Length: 85
Image (tube, rainbow, N blue to C red):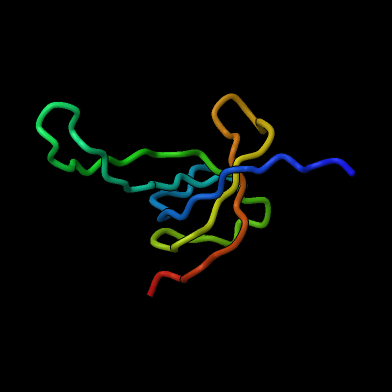
């Protein structure tokens, strides 16, 4: 029996529709400052493959790491957790 590789999954917010079958998702997280110990807010923007063009700006989505679709896209949309309202 072969073990499947565990792919990273993240939850983020759609910030733009960047072309056909593509979206940009931001992920917010906190990191601890190495010297002072204060927690700092950080944000990263990820290009995501959305094959059905079903997400809209403001949606809360779950994404998963996968094989590269293009130079920048190596994440895919798993599901829309909450529609923008």
